Length: 126
Length: 126
Image (cartoon, rainbow over all chains, first blue to last red; front, side):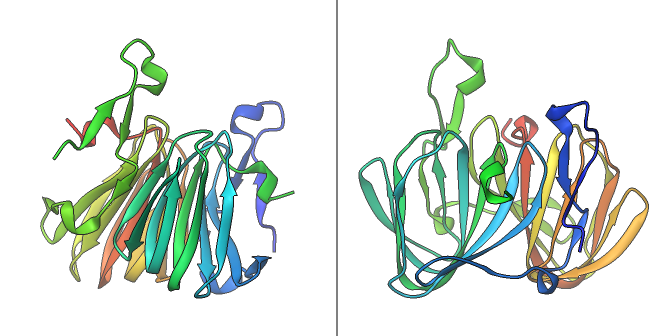
């Protein structure tokens, strides 16, 4: 499967994007940690949509990046820590991580986060 | 409820953002069409996360905008049209709408789309 394409090699600002229609069943889960796996969904250079599944007890360790992150809690319960403040979020909740804010999650009840990064996470598709 | 805050009035590039933790139950649905309602979730100037609920048969009419849009089908089934091509997408699928691409949806089975826009939709919070 051609997963992404180069739209215009001379214009790096708009050079990369996913296909327009992406079927979840055609995208393999990628194991990224103990009890954690992800699927990269639609993206271009500006923004990237990523589903991350967590087993109960799985951890997204504290880290930071220059990207803005917004996340929707699609399923389950998570203790979410942003800049030293922790709150429990469940399905229907969301959170905003400013650039360089230190953040992490602990999965309290099996579930899935829909993570969004802006700009895209180039490191995810290397 | 203070829904958003001005971080730095002298720097428009980073001037607006949602709160860091957003509880879905505290955000009211906004009716935006017949059988269509939305909740604006986490955002800053770079990116905005929006849940849009559709009743069966509800329509998101064809339109275009300069923002990149990436959308996750969180629930239900939708006929999604992008630049004249229509495919049926269901829970777990996603789609990418390049800037200015003409797009719309028809809800085939009651559900919810998690829409992401980059940059943010300033018109949504006026």
